[in-house]
Image 1 (cartoon, rainbow, N blue to C red):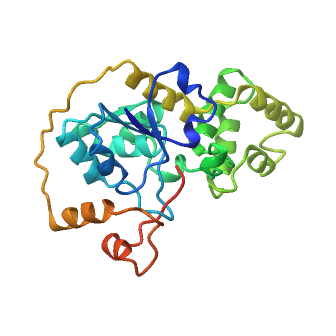
Image 2 (tube, rainbow, N blue to C red):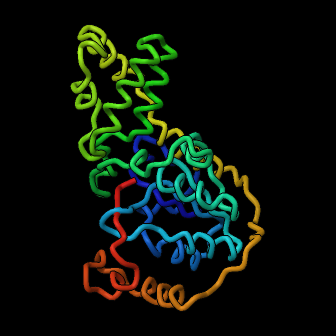
Amino acid sequence: MIVFAGPSIAGLDLASIGEFDLRPPVQQGDVYLATRDRPQAVGIIDGYFEGAPSVWHKEILWALTQGIPVFGAASMGALRAAELHAFGMIGIGQIFEAYRDETLEDDDEVALLHGPEEMRYPQLSLAMVNVRATLDAAQCARVITQDQAAWIADHAKSQFYKTRTWDSVLATTTSQEIPDALRQKLRGWIDQNEVDQKRIDAHALLMRLAKGDFDTPQPNFHFEETNLWLNATKIWSRPRVAIPEAGDEAYQLFGDCSFLDE
């Protein structure tokens, strides 16, 4: 079973869950190439969409037509599953459900800055979905009120995803919104009780795969092998040496597809 993941699985003991062919966050062409290995299933957790072209919807549809179940959760996987669940992609977790139900709409809800693969993708900024989950938990614990949670969420949402941290978010709240003593109490509470919803949903996806709880897809659509698709598969099949730059054939074919680390 092939799983594309990075920062969302940081801290998980994968060996205790199951055996996976773990690959870096997905980018354009990766799912198509994965189908050539004939996996039992494909799981998409993390992916790129700024700096490298993001995974195509059509390559996920291709995998489904090849009889390969495709699961999505937590980040890029949740986004694509929300967009393609009607075609047979299987979404898992609260983040997927929020996108599917249009409670969440913006891509930046799951975006964050992280370190390189060599360091196991350490999270360097704070995903907005984790802000919301943590604030919900703080309300349930009666640490803050609903209004205070809303004010903090608004401050967090206004910040650029690469620079968003709990310290930066709480520092922008006013004493009228969050009294100084409460701000210190909340910061300590977060240190002990922060909710990583992305990791929770990623874990749920891995557990689903490990249990083998899936069937062969029965696509209800016709897959059209257009010239663009055929040209794309030829390019993806070449050895990948670098992210396409402006002027490269791949760049000209797919355009300026932006990439965020999701």
